[in-house]
Length: 107
Image (cartoon, rainbow, N blue to C red; front, side, top):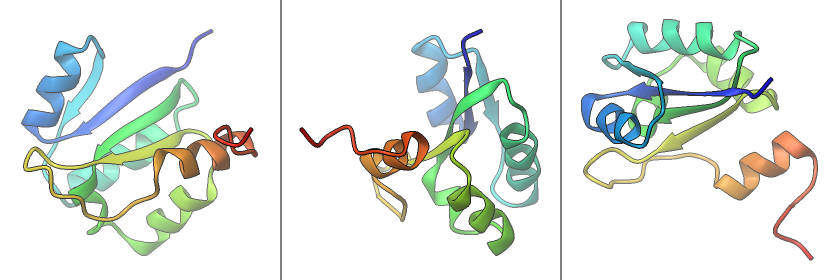
């Protein structure tokens, strides 16, 4: 069974991923609604990748941040907001290395 991709964020992020054909897209506001949905999705074994609005991540509870940084599955990827402004987060290579246990960019 293939693992699913979830997208959580604002309307512009959701629209882009819906247009790309991702079916599990959730529009939420920053704060508790985002945190609750993120917790629910990372505990669902159907999802292998969770794409979130990067700006939303900076306000979440430290315990949830720690949990996300310590899990290898699903991979949680923060993407910049529509404005393009980058907040904080690991590179895609670092996330893949954490999930797989080795660096795929090294020869």
